[in-house]
Length: 219
Image 1 (cartoon, rainbow, N blue to C red):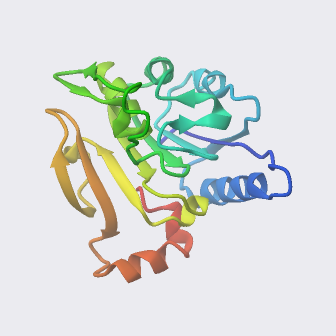
Image 2: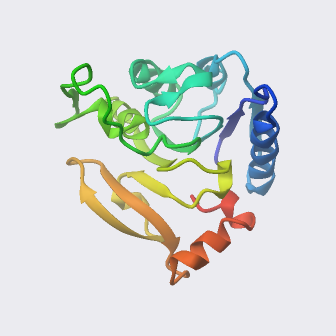
């Protein structure tokens, strides 16, 4: 049985209902799973404490909040401290699926080039923080010998209904999706995730994201 943790930020920004949406979609996601889900509203950014509580292990981590290519600002997680989050996850599991229901975490960033040059060693290769938050998290977990599957959005969108996705992980673990991909290292690949094989077109994939499949596409 998978041990699953869903974290969301239920605080609404002024004049908005974004926190309500994160709460609603996190609840819908948890109800759609075949195994029990630990569902937590974290408004103080201390998501690592919730991960550490998973003393029996952690197989799936889903996060519902605002995101950027650099990280999860309201969760106080970014590419600058991603190593610490990876170490926290590695402390409770050696294999994990991370589903980032957060805008743009799967996209690279390129601004401030003079301040953001260089690479970070990652297993047998190096990555640039500018490759994006999800990729940085995947690299840091791989360095700690954690087998990964990470799903993240490449654009802004409505939480679970955004069809623009990437998959980061080891190709041995995914056979149910069709991908276009480039090699990113000896152990890890970054691949665009579009429809499952049963879907022939992008239009069908977008339509599926409006159904309950939006909670299940990663399985």
